Image (tube, rainbow, N blue to C red):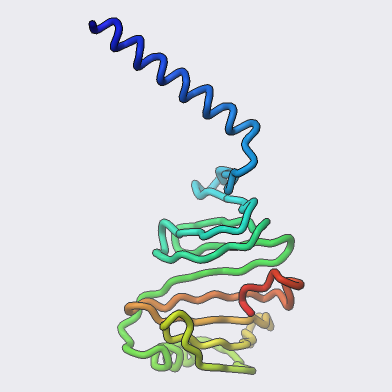
Length: 168
């Protein structure tokens, strides 16, 4: 009886191994390819548009096709060709996003060219065009206030091309 049970388990394991190899080699519906990096993080390339859930920063976002995702401990990089979007999460004791940004602006040397208050998916948000006065880098930045966390999505890329700018 034990021998028969072990043979069934061995057969199932072999079948699962073969199925995994076949799907890996010939499967068309894969979503991510993973590449380990030297810093211990994983880089993922999205082959079809899909939702990405960060393990470290507790957010989920729709990622367009052909973006590369590099999740680090404190931020996530989204890359498309030479373009880059950074997503960062900061904790705060402020009750309002405006209070957070007012304090933030006092501690950094920024020039804000445009600013719009928005409500995105029922979350308080601010979209700004900022220039770092020390480095001269100009960025498009979204700040989201979610449960005492401020999520920042930013890019210094001028344009992502038609259909690829989800920081619209």
